[in-house]
Length: 261
Image (tube, rainbow, N blue to C red; front, side):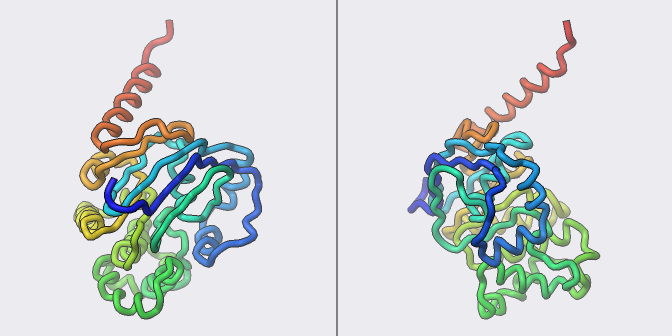
């Protein structure tokens, strides 16, 4: 672990039981209002998706979260982002946080790309002055050409991801949280994202990301957390944890492929 702790989770658990979110920030409201989160929240009532999870993340760390579908990776990221409140335990996240947790969340389909860049930057906490000073860099990074002036309802998933990543990676943030946002886009854009992530961490930033692209995680992360059924199964060097996860996954697949006797 490097430097001071920016993220601390102490025996954190999350149970979905139709809790009401009476106090929400603008960012939380935008994400919830423009995603399927409310529907998911209702259908997963009383399900304990995270249980007794504890870890710390320091400055200049790039941490991967790995695990099967339904392991709790997205819920864990939403807890760190402040979108969910823990049912048990304590979470502390210091610094300015950018979260890219669901592609398209926080965007208005009728607004064009430029307008959505500004709105998304504001939702993540950038002031107008900060956005103004970084907007050209964001537009250049997104690199979506003339469609920037068109409503994003006409955008592909990859184009929307470019906008969200441009704000997160070009803004002045201390912590970036990402959930599968790196799975879209062509190879050249993914390489550009990879370079930006490495530079962000080298410059003192902290990033926590969940992805099924284990090769990418090997390249940009030094540490990995393995979630299994909502519990932290392993926490250590990315190579060791990812290899352990891969081995366990292969063994399960081989077992399922065995003929019945």
